[in-house]
Amino acid sequence: MRRIRIRKGRFVAPLMFAGLLATGSYAFMASNTVPASNVGQGAQAISGYTASGVSYTLDTSSGTANVTGVSFSLSPDNGGTAPTTVKARLTSTGTYQSCTNSSGTTWTCSFTGVTALSAVSLDIAAAS
Image (cartoon, rainbow, N blue to C red):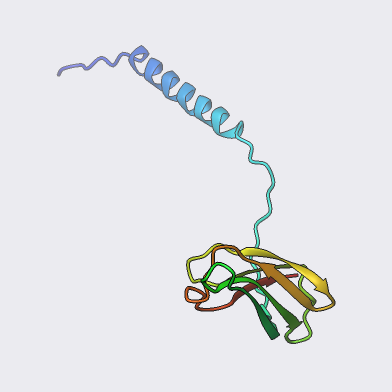
């Protein structure tokens, strides 16, 4: 009969190493902190404005009819609030120009370099 000798010390070192790894990784995981934060989502209906009383100002002194200004009245739809910021443009690729509230619900915008021929639409952006 043959005897097999098992060396007990041979398994102790790997077990200790595995124990150290498990403890070290737990300590690393336990040290992570994440600050509190807020996240949310909501929806709100966007009501618009109705423009009325649109009036253009033309300058024909250069031989070409240029649109130099436009004025209009804005009324909020669905009981909304009056706008505080209004911008407008007269061409689909043009830059929006800031408008000023001249009185009550009437807004006035000034333009330069816009010919009557290139003014294809009045695009108004308004926000309260």
